[in-house]
Length: 258
Image 1: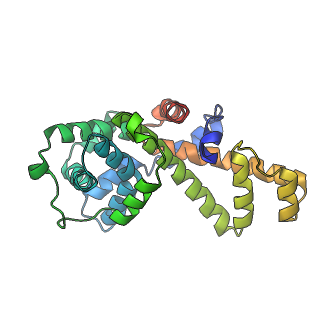
Image 2: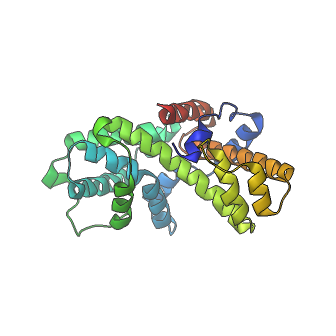
């Protein structure tokens, strides 16, 4: 289990008033708005499309692969699914109906595969836009240690969805620390997000950083609080209304703990 997963398993107090207020503010730009922006003809549409695909390609590709398609067929079907998704105009209605993007995408994907004929519905190789570099996708697939042969397609989708959210959180957190010139501090503190045996003590980290042990403890408290806040924000970006955040967060934690 990764450091991020270990930390998530203890997030029973994420829904604090402060986090809730921050998440409500974050609702101005959600993954739903990214979908809607990607459908438009605005200059930001391409950037929005790339963001959407980078977040959801891996879970969707894994779902398709589990249904018995070859890597090449799964690549084409995944690209075809995103292309169809962006042609539809019912997303705004779903958003108003308090949709959860995770559930909406999974249901849409099942319908897509049920109706797809390999020749008629897939994007022909070499045609259309490549939404995410395929070498990047395949490298990630090879590095995936999940025992996919024992998981259902739904489980693969949910698991990869949760892990991708965690990656977004850690990426944002790392970016903040590096921008502040605290890259070494970030690298040391993230070791303590897990309970893996053999990790360094905070006293050892303090010696390496040239800080007191108490200062390291305070710094770890701050990074943990910020980690939780960013996780809450990422979850908030996958639902249509703020009231769904806590339920989706509980589902997210249950996926990682399963």
